[in-house]
Length: 225
Ligand SMILES: Nc1ncnc2c1ncn2[C@@H]1O[C@H](COP(=O)(O)OP(=O)(O)O)[C@@H](O)[C@H]1O
Ligand SMILES: [Mg+2]
Image (tube, rainbow, N blue to C red; front, side, top):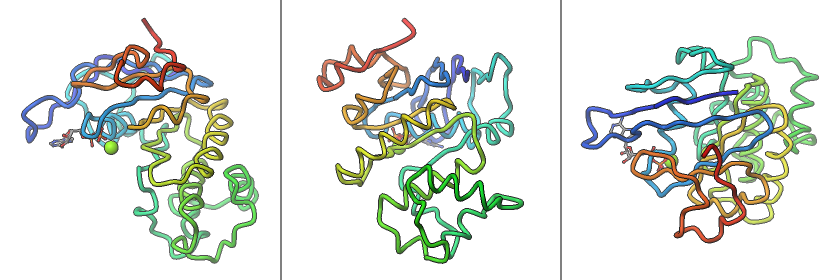
């Protein structure tokens, strides 16, 4: 289980703290959602968890042990909001090979199958894929590292509804083996998936069910309190 204790983040360039003491537990098999308006600090939260930014206070533990940011970069797989903007490979095969010392072909095939890209041509340019396929590829790149914690920033942003349904099914499947955190400004799309939901406001998490301005989230249970 991943545990955030009193996480604080206040960059010098920001007049207000972005996070003011965030507590959160992410357990395997309990897909978790953090909702919040644009600018509420959702992406910042993922950057802190995944070790891309340093908190100004608090700690992050895995199975009770405090982890450095370097350890968290190993532990976590972060899929950016528009992952296709971060592609480096000229081909799908190259993209999968990035960050791998040696690409295990069988494992890569299994992961591609898992994300619904079993029939993909590895010599194709990532730009030639559809939007949904590009998201799946970005997810596959992270899954190849077999992260214990999977962090998804606005995974449905810019995708049409049919693709969204498929993405939700895939996430449900993935969460059975790892801690999963989704941050989004459209929490109602994740109702079927989520086991605990939070609302990030003014740098603090509140149980999502108590947010009157999100009536569509009634099915999502707040947790921990
Ligand atoms: N290093 C930083 N310096 C100044 N402000 C920052 C920094 N990191 C984040 N912020 C501010 O924190 C707020 C939250 O940003 P972000 O995490 O991107 O929100 P969200 O993902 O919910 O839209 C924004 O107002 C942003 O400008
Ligand atoms: Mg964001």
